Amino acid sequence: MNGSFELGPALLFVPGDRPERLAKALERADAAILDLEDAVAPDAKAAAREALIAADPDPDRVVVRVNAPVTADFVLDLAALAQTRVRTVMVAKAEDPASLDPLVSYEVIALCETARGVVAAEQLAACAQVVALMWGAEDLVASLGGTSSRGDGGRYRDVARLARARVLLAAGAFGKRAIDAVHVDIADLEGLSVEARDAAASGFAATACIHPGQVAAIREAYAPRPEQVEWARAVLAAAEGERGVFRFEGRMIDEPILRHARSLVQRARR
Image (cartoon, rainbow, N blue to C red; front, side):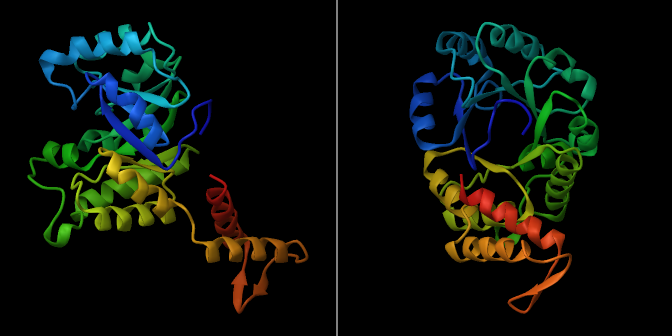
């Protein structure tokens, strides 16, 4: 990611009106997302902003999610942010690149969680202040008039999978990071593990979560297995004595495969 904020694999949401949970979240997760939007009731948003100012959270490990730019709360959120050291802001329901202009002095995570937001993912990723994209399944389906992001067996419906892929591709096309959506079934750690492993293998930099009990599953999923790291290091070592395409352990190795290997080694260092 460009800028100072570094994503770890597990990003834990914390309600903005429950600041006492922030310290524990930072103990458990790689970073915390202090939420001023959906996790806070309308009549508690003012108190959440006051709590944000009072906490003045660690700018290196805390992201603040602000309300959508089309809302009056967005302006009030920015006024509160200006009184803190926070440098990384997640914008809920991001849809219009121009709406991010007031955030040119911040590192922005654009949350594509509506039909318009997903369709505009490429334009949002092109903004200089945007350092990452995230997608959201439930708001997306709601924006389409649907009732559930998942079908039988708990698997995402095709429209959600398309949105996930589009946001990942848009982020990658502009050299930005991508964050996978939360798994709302807190008890379904097996399902979360499957999705997080797929996210890591596909190129997501992190997965967001809503409960501390989900952190370990995400970290384990993003950590490559020892045999994968061993293979990656061996093939990179073998490449030093080769020119162009070569054969290693019965497999053709070219530059894309070497890039996969470098990614595995990098993830192992986290």
